[in-house]
Image (cartoon, rainbow, N blue to C red; front, side):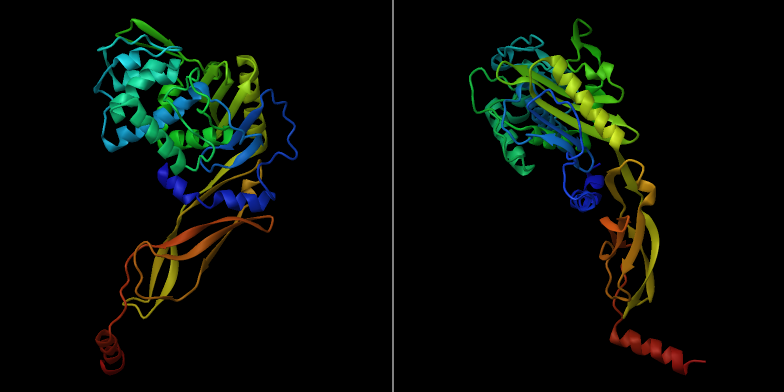
Length: 381
């Protein structure tokens, strides 16, 4: 999925050209029952709808999206493993709100901790995981804020790992920033979806039942994540995910008055996205021939790297591809060199391009090799 991100990097600006400007809110008529929302397509990051998405608000437990992202990064690097045991500290066990009632000194696997955070939004498990990864909650929070900066979350500041805000007024983010970190989590680590789609599960050898706080998982077709949140300061929040016909959407709602209004707004955003847009993926183009000047061979082949974008529904079949390589390509040519591009157009408008990549090394011919070739051509019979 990370490679797909790289290959689709040009998409966002390209779609801006196609549609004039993003987000596509001008003709949208959606009844929104929350002060801040955003709807994006996950692979490309294309914004399909937004309303006051850059207003800073309390995120409540949606904070845990960033906590989970850093936990998954630690899993990827081998710093921690799913089956290793987490030793619960007094600090973690003392968290209020949603919890699995961890006891100081209790041992639980990383995987069960992740399930507890994802499914029932356990504040104590979030802190225990943070301490296990970073050594202390404060060091983990520093990592959260550093990751937010790295991802370009310009209006976000985290004070803790779980979103409890009874003692802070500076734990703030925006719907847009939540969409950014949610996208990073599910695209880079799609394995998280096997937990976010669980309706009910158990821990402690079946003695403790976990029930998903995200009711959309059960009642909206295609819903596959991600995280709910509520405090008196935040109102009802959610970063919700749903996938249909190969298109993965993320809808973020902040500050709704009730959980029903939060969920209804998420459904309306998803309905709008699925009804009006489609995810279009154009595969790699293989064996594109090109000529080489001053090389040990006169020609080679290259590969088009593929392209993906979000289009108005029903238009992907009208996309045209134009291969452009300035030939001959001067030697030396290195495998992986960009030697041209494939331009994608719709109704005469460019919507993006993909690079054409050389498939092999071709060395520049030496002076003596050139003389040898001339000799063979003109003097050998």
